Length: 555
Image (cartoon, rainbow, N blue to C red; front, side, top):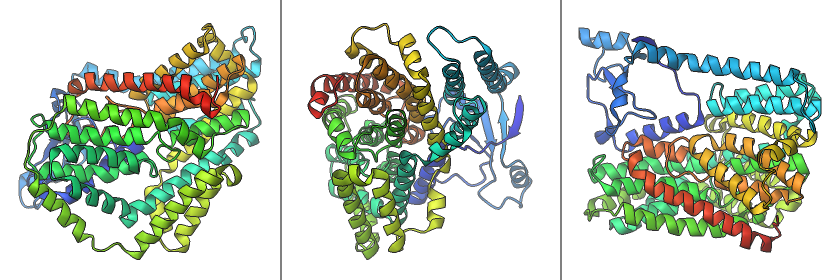
């Protein structure tokens, strides 16, 4: 048995889980508050939940009692041990789990040193070999999580200069890439929507209107999550909808493991947000990351309109397929939702009339989206986004303190390093070499794209989507350079499927929040999730083969 201080999660996903659970607690205090005097809770993955498995009993965390912690010996004990995690797993398992991270760190460093010192293989220059060494180290740390994503990216920037792959000044200058500033501005726009309550008002109004029956409530959650993800980053939409869905489930007294309706609601939220997130450049930061790597490597880009047109048929197909799967595998019970609808209407009414600030914010968002559609090639999508952010400050719709509270600055660092690495791999020829050694033996471009997109979907279920894009887009660009294919097509073939996660909680914040509710069980999701993955892969490759050439995206 081992004990250690409770580690505070540092990832964006963990922060969102805390945000979602805190909001849920405030929305439905009577249903989710801890009982007084409770001294320890089980930790079950992303969140403690009634549906947690047996493994949750292996690790316990002491919490301060909710009542006065100083009045009784038990209260003093709970207070003194607050924040302590007791790991009750066998000692061998504890030691093994704690030795994995140091082992990966050392192994990655040794592999990097060996690659740098080794003679380059035929067809690879020494500089390209060093670029591949940096890439291998970065992918190892990104995938394993041995270091936070953003720390690994900072390490990449330093290694590119120190190993002579590119001048250090050029490596650091790549943090000024247009995609980085677009991501930053998109986060600021989402912060304004979140802090002004515009998104919550829209969600409550829609749910109150369609909550009369289970047959209309589930698709309203599903479609609203998708449509909001067209214009707001998907993690922000998920954090906004999660406490509302939790409150709906609590009002109907739907227990974990015994309600298909509750499962359908949380799954509809996650699937809707994920599918909608691929529709535009705003849905997920992986899209600007992919475009940043593309721009740095080739000097070309994909406009806001081109991206939306390329993904529109796939989004429509997946929304239809997802709704059918939800209806077939999780048909809702015939619950009486009158009280739930009344509660939602009361919450919506409590917000009062639409304020002038919300109206101005809506106008700014509308004008910004229109400008992206008609002027992104002239003014750049980052430039338009920055003008919108300035307008938010001009009209006092956003404060810098709110920006600091909301924006995940680590993601900005992560993307700067990934873009620099992608550019280095392409300029040195390392990406083309890697693509030839991995997928270059395939004679059919369609088969190469099919395999690459399947890798993106599969890895996206298990890894951060940003890490998947950072690892696979350079390979796709190498294939494009080697075979004379359109680099934009290969970029889309990775970035679009990387955002489609339907089973595991690891890939997206929406999935992590849905699983943290305790109402989703992985064994129930395997078959419907696999069907959605197959639909996504087939739909994407059919679009690449027959639809994208109409848009000029040839291969």
